[in-house]
Image (cartoon, chains in turn blue, orange, purple, green):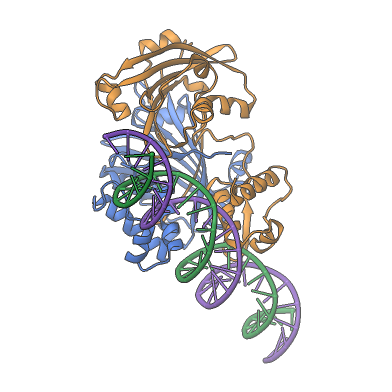
Length: 235
Length: 235
DNA sequence: TAGTTTAACTTGTATAGACAAGTTATACAA
DNA sequence: TTGTATAACTTGTCTATACAAGTTAAACTA
């Protein structure tokens, strides 16, 4: 792995362990500690800043941002399995449907492919504490993901794509809205007494900028929470 | 302004104008065009990548990410006025309350200050197409924001803070949930037939990492839409 | 004492150079 | 024709240096 990434990870650890309380050592000191040039240290610090770990102040140093450790980020691109594991929540996934289909007009539009192109269609229900609260509808481009074993769907698709297929997942465009439940939602989720669902639609891309997945994740509103860290962009 | 920021802005313009269709010129070419070193170009490109304009591919170049131009980012830190202006939507803001108060226990916790510290309390209603759809509750630390004129509240608080007071707004931690409307919501918003509100709670920080504002923004669900760009962080 | 200057820190910006590593198209060989 | 090597591109990482600009605390001056 690259030097600046290792430094980044080590600093994250030291922040988590409260090894440094309010401020990081100066860039000069860090470059001596890690035997790296100042620019390499600055690359690691840029990552830390981007991820919301530190705030750099000109002339002063790098202040540590007190993350509410409980406020794990649901933002970013994280698989359901990764998320539940971080929180220590027990959840089960049941695959309702997994099949190869030819894209219809709507699906083709979602995946930026031509109508009739072969794709995977996947429907999963997530159960937390015995309640069915999340419905995930996935389309995957079969030109990119040729095989999609049932085991991967029950476990973690991202683990399969990155680990087995060696695909690099890079970025996503997401949209969050609140909508009325469909008959499908009511059929598959425990929706008694809830009149809305939170819908997260995502397009997920690889490192070479190819779109490979479209996901519609439908949440019961009481179990939905989205935490975000944002930096202001001037100009 | 710094060189790499000007280059960043110029490239954003050229992407928007479709001056470059699918790919950016190579870093070498750009460094000649802008008479800058490659590292300076790379700083501009890092910003573009961070903001979701391009995807860098090792050995190939910088691919332009097709942003749905309509999908303006509600993510990031953008004032209500800036957002409405970008979309060309006509909206009005009415100030329901603007007063100096001593923080109670809850408010003190929100702003990370001691109980009894002086702060601004602000309540505003946003009206779009003649419907009252957003209720904004703001607390501002008065040790940082000493004066808060009514005019600034009706126009744009951020414009006042950055323009008049010279404060640098830097980052925010946000949380989005869906909740039941309070009596207050029903009193101030047009909630007929809607049984939920989308609640966005934000802590907003300055460049020196001081927390100066807590905002609770309560949206009627049919008018709520959140668009996000996220990059996957490995390790 | 109180205020100001200065020196020694800090981070920010820009440059130049070297090498590693991934991609592509051409030239070459079987 | 087909496949392979190669050369010329591309971006990624790391280093070293120089100077600008913001902060702080000690030293100095009135």
